[in-house]
Image 1: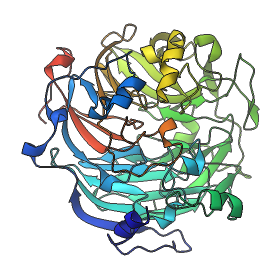
Image 2: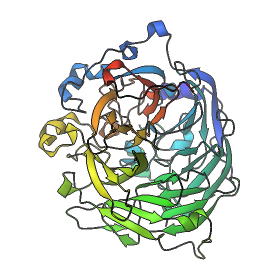
Image 3: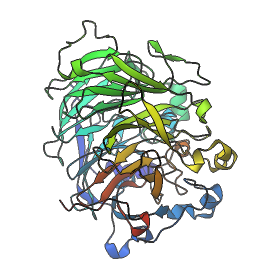
Image 4: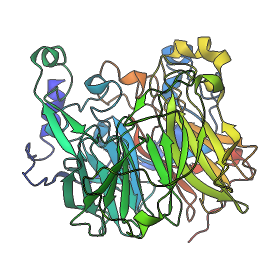
Length: 533
């Protein structure tokens, strides 16, 4: 382990300490490529399917132990190009602008804390942070640099980018930092501002725990805790001027970024959201309210007591700035238009599952949300799944279909629990959100799934992708419970980008890093054709 870190330290000079105003540091890799020559590439580049051997979405334990799962599984998709980001592992979130992808690592805010990420004490490792990847050559994406700043060291699920304004934002997982990058040159983002949202508390080093965890890369130095805001996820308005940062167990933060050099907190409000989304007009907020309930009994959810579900809020006054900054920052929630509740146990999910994802799309004149629940760890079968909600009448949202794999079924729990894997739903993407026909969902160990939603009430899975795990990445005691099993399987947790001009699909996975995929004939005739523009 020590020799690994000696090797990594030699990659570049690295400043341990960030400056007092929240400056950034970077390690530049000058277009490092992790792909091999075309002639040397493996079977995952071929158009030949390698079907899952068990249930839909499953990586059976027997196949893990035999080594078969280490070859990956696929249907209707092939690999175009890949960058393993120097085999760092712990890749968890992805955003993009133009030909550039941005991939960040898991943070101490993840469910198992330092036991789950090899970069627990993030700032002391030059591989942790936001990897900038030049994907202008899809067959050979190159790592340009890794950027570190207060939020990018541990952004959890908050990484977002805006194409219109060419900016990247993130909030520190479990903490208070909020960073804005100017990505006018997408390959060379510059930290424009870093502010604190609320009050940050740094817990001192805990000698006994630090000693126990001394073998973990990066160690355990300090954990940042935010009050009354604890960063978790984030959604960014389409005009790139307002960020809604969620905390899942505390308040939501509304951050004004009209001036990217001077962002500021406008409001903190409850109920807490796990994640969120907006409509294209930026006057509706879709809040995945993580009630963390079992049998319909709510637990404290910030200042409010809530239930799992989807809230639709009118944020017109925030968009047009007719409402000013709250005098004491705490504010009432924006006007709620409707709330669609569900109880995880009653719909066939584990008691710990909670509302997670909210993303808007249209299809044939009707308006929908994709929403999924989540609990990101092994041992909590039945795992959370997703759903499509018709919000054409936003006062009466209704679930029209479920996005559910066989591994998510209660009847299959005894079989899937043996896999020591996590099959929970996580994030999403569309071929074209304004007229969606394809839905992309990620399911950790369940991989990337592709659904034909020409008819949203009857979604049909047409393709899937289980990456070949990268055995060179560092592993820690509990990483396999949500991230990577080393040589047995890899997890796909990120948002998904579809590029209509090329037909390419962008994802990142925990150990295999950034990947560009393309459809193969076995995905069927309904896949969109590349526009070539």
